Image 1 (cartoon, one colour):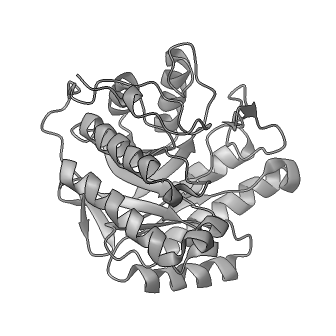
Image 2 (cartoon, helix red, strand yellow):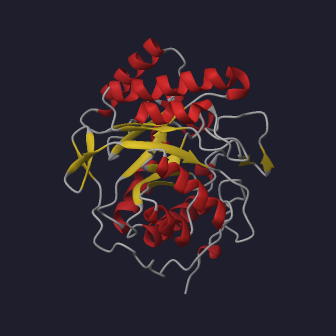
Length: 317
């Protein structure tokens, strides 16, 4: 039985989740759960319009269980607190374990699951690496797609503008289309996005089901104007503000609260299908190190709430 470990990717902070057999099905705890679908500019779930009220989670140092998530008890506490304060979606940057998926459903949360691959290097120059990326993505989607916790698959996140220029716009567009098709071949009903950002807004990706952008503008008029521009790019597809927030170290906790709430209110005011606050906790691990000079969390590393936590809750309400 082939395992993902047979096709390892370049080691990175975003590709250290443990591997599982790609043919082992998850035991769905809600076999008949409705899948989300797109309906023009919005998402529908169980026939009703459904807005993403999300928060990002991770990336974390791999725990003793091997997955790039906190220990189970901490995930339970985090998910329960998220649900209690009005979130309905959690954005993940690394593939979750079966237990994390089940725990999300127990707490009434849906997941945006990011594919993890070395997108910060000149990957298109290595055909074997590209093949392994496609193989690993297919295995991940095969393992995850049938679970009722899954809302969207994100096939990438902010490929750096320098990498796009190196490979050319057309080269990256072609590769992202391949990843989209890999996902759809395994799970035709799954919704697929690629998370873009302003430096590469020129990428033409008309095949995506949902158009997602990370945007951190701090002036409301400029943010609303840019969201209107992104609607033109999205056309008749849903537009998701997939990251928004502010750093409490630089803006102060009150400033972080005001800025994050403004960004989320603007997203809904400008007709997006939802927004994701970045991020849940100040605990952040990347590139083999804990990041200590950024504090974007709605709670700190000890899970003490900041003013931004209540501001985001009020904005979503």
